[in-house]
Structure formats: structure tokens, C-alpha cells
Length: 329
Ligand code: NDP
Image 1 (cartoon, helix red, strand yellow):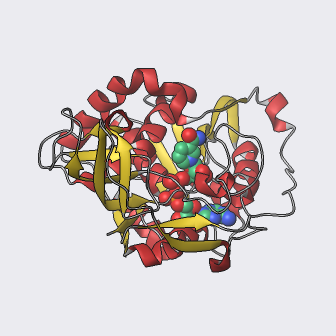
Image 2: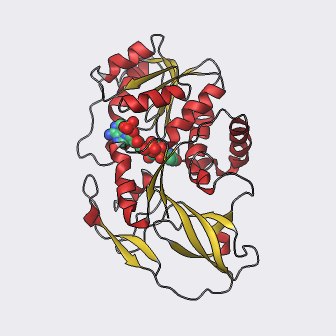
């Protein structure tokens, strides 16, 4: 019987297992134009935490007592749509469940070829596209720039590091713990700071970037944002992608270096990846070239089984993932 994770309470702070319930899905017949998809891989992403709050944002909140949604890839196992016959590999947004019934136009056929389907939930999908446009279009980063990227061992961050290196930039990453620091360095980063280490972040970043930073790609907010301000060069550009440090926080972090926005003429711009949907072919072309060069490392942290999906989601907030966090069904 098909099942889906429902949100049953709106979390306060870090979600707990009791905020979620795995419930049976209606196993109805297909209508004309619909397909039944066996999901093979499900995505968990930090933005889903925002959808658990009952607040107005760029996407509506998850409804209480209803299946949650999110990125997924799978295979059509029953079809009443000529465009997507049985066996087609597709990507769609009916995640958090093992089986989905969708109108065919809500599932996108994946390209044929050898690329594993879960790559389209990571570097070749939404997180990779976020990295691409955040770095190159929002921050307007270019060869010769010194780029600082936080959560550099994560899905978006590890793509930022590798795109920036492929484009001739100097890259400084931050990550939590020695293993992640070593891994980010292996991706090509010129320096990596361990924000969980003994050296305060502002000092560690100053040592890693003695000539300052031109670009900050923010995935974390809080003290990372502050440290980036502390070392921002004149006319630095900040692409504000995410602020995971604040997603479960009850208290704001004080920004001691805020006024440097003025003296350094820092340009700060937030963005949502969907702002760039009309330019998706630029990403496919550019990222395709980097991947085809053989220099791109695609890393996944895999949690097995639908039952364990809340573990995978919660693991994002304690750094359990290296690269893209995925659930394999
Ligand atoms: P990640 O794969 O980077 O996973 C989250 C990582 O964040 C963890 O592994 C952990 O790494 C780090 N982290 C968690 N809590 C904290 C904290 N309190 N302080 C510092 N680091 C923390 O996730 P994604 O790559 O999917 O997303 C990265 C960011 O980009 C998120 O903020 C997300 O919301 C945002 N995003 C925004 C999009 C947009 O359109 N604007 C689209 C996609 C993502 P570590 O072990 O190093 O601490």
C-alpha cells in the first residue's frame, strides 16, 4: 500500500518525529492523462523547514494532516498519458511518498543516458542550479574573485566550490568538522575554515582570506554572514541563498559588522532559484560542460527507506550530510 509522510504539527524550533506521521495514500484508479509513478529517490531540503511554518512566503506552507511535497525522481509504472509511457524516468514534486499519481504535465521526463536519476535532485537539479545562478548571476562572480561560501560541504555549497574553481576564482569554504574540511579541500577549495573549531570564525576567515573577499555565497546566515561582512572588500557582492542557522532559531544573531555594508559599499541580493527558470538552458549547458570535463565530484549521503525520511530531513540541521542528502526507496 502506498504511503506518504504528513505534517501533523507545526514545529517549534527543531522539528521532532512527533511532528510527522506516515499514512496510507488513496490507491485510486488513474484518470485520463494521469500516470502512476514509483518513486525511487526522494529529496530532503532545508527550505522544507520554512514550509512547516504557517507564514506567508514564496511557497505556501504545508497543510496540516496532508502529505508533504518535495523533489522526487522515479519511474512510470502505469500510464493513461501517451506522452509518458510505462518505464519513463521522470522528475516531479510529489515527494515524501513512495508512489505518486500525477497529471502527466506535472512530471518531467529525465534525459536518456547513463547519468543516475538521483543526480537530477542534486548537482544536475535544483541545488546545482541554485549554485550556478547564485554565484554567476546574482553575485556576478568572475575569474580572479575571492569567493567565500558557507555550508561548503552541502549540496549547494559543494557545487558552488566546484563551479567557482572551474571559472578561475579563489575559493574559501566553511564547513563543520575536520572530515568535511578535508573533503571540501579535495573539491579544489583553496582554503576551508572549520566553523566548529577552536578559532572564532571571524579570525579564521581573516587568516584564510588575508586580502579579503569579493563575493560571499550565503547558505548559513548568522555569524557566517557577519564574518563575511568583517572581511568584505570594497564593492563586494553577497548572494543570499539561505540562512539555515536561523531556520530553527528563536533568537536572532547580533551582527557586529553590519555597518561595513556602508564603508565597503557591499551589494547584498537575495534570490530564489526559480527566479532563473527562464534561463535553465544556460545551467544545463554550462554545468554539462563542467561535468563532462570529468572534474566534477558528485557526492550523496543516502538514507534508506521511506520510514527513515524524517531522519534524513532532520540530519540536514546537524550536518549529517556530505553533498546531497537523499532518501533511496
Ligand atoms: P546542505 O546540503 O548544505 O545541508 C545543510 C548543511 O548546512 C548541513 O550539512 C550543515 O553542514 C549546514 N548547517 C546546518 N545547520 C547549520 C548551522 N546552524 N550553522 C552552520 N551550518 C549549518 O543543504 P542545501 O545545499 O540543500 O542548502 C543550502 C542552503 O541553501 C540552505 O540554507 C537552503 O535553504 C538554501 N537554498 C536556497 C535556495 C534558493 O532558491 N534560495 C535553493 C536551495 C537551497 P555542516 O556540517 O558544515 O554544518
